[in-house]
Length: 519
Image 1 (cartoon, rainbow, N blue to C red):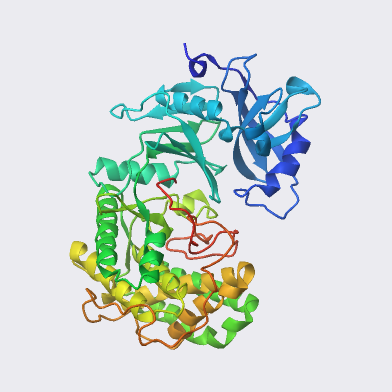
Image 2: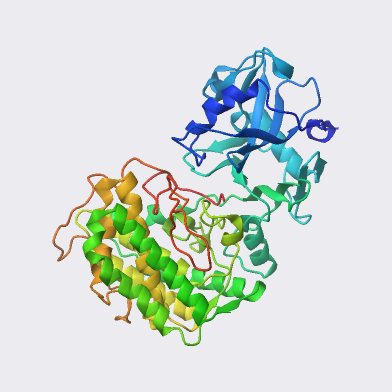
């Protein structure tokens, strides 16, 4: 019997000697939402040992209540740490069941990471934990694990270049969209999203299960969409063929989600509330970002137009919820895949699972093209415009409807996104405030660049720098800051855009090593 199959001790006691070390360790973790804030309440919700008593190392699974948020930890326990694991040390327990032992972040320990895969290969329960898998999927044993660095809100492990496990850090009751939506797409026959092969949950008394982790195929040899776009810009190369193909892929995913899961029509009252939420976010941002104030009236016009134009309502369905170029992969065979369906992690899970207008995803990609073009010196607006047009044309090729045919709705969502970006950059990367402010000025003036139909995009992109006046641009890409892959936080409600509680997550990725399907 494997180690994974023979363990089974659980506990609901307090944290004891672990509490002071966790109070110091949690606030400095990249995935902890309360960075910079002193922890008040720290309480154990559940604990489970994934190895038999007396094993060394030990693997302890914890769910913690941290000031009302639930966090998942996987802690290793050893008498001493080898040099390779020294950076993972949390502290040494002075008393209690782990007295004299080193407590450390367990996901960086290859033996413990391998144990987690064994658990996923063998469905079953362990205290509050429930492991499940697709019975048709073949998951080989003894795949070598390695952690994926640079993430923000979660942690991921790659197993032998075959699979990637995303371990959710902040969790809540209900199925996570990053499990729910890819499974629905796989059942519908949509191959644009890696299908989950295994997952694990926690079942706690009196509530829905909490999704804790998802194992998916690792798309070896794929290119991160953001990195690919930047390389093409740097080489002065056209990107419209890729943008067109990405538009088709996005439309295929939206169509499959609409067929597989319920859709709704937001009536005039709901649409008015949607526009009201956007207006409220604009007002809050203008109070915080003085540069935005001269444009507030013009921007508000986009939301007023949305509220006034919805006689028949707005179609809403399940969507990606946090789509930008960093959430896309061009695979080794040249096709596009979409990844990271968790949505904006700072939003409540129930909000992320609500139907929303598909144009929210479209606006995210269109703004991402603008960010990529702004990362180039000099700014390449013709490149961004051509990519935006090509993406919309590709989307229309699949759905029969070009997103630009509803310019009021598209402009409202792009405006909402740009307002969020301005607030984010003002707080975290002031040197980059000029990027969303350029869009703010255009949107406030009611410019139709990108909203009306344009000439066919194929082959029409200007080479970066061709016939453009240099504008302000960063010296070396977006620079240091929060990692790519997780988008801005957002407020609740159908179709809600960025909200009040901004996390330290970038609205668009920065140059970094290519990402693979994680979330």
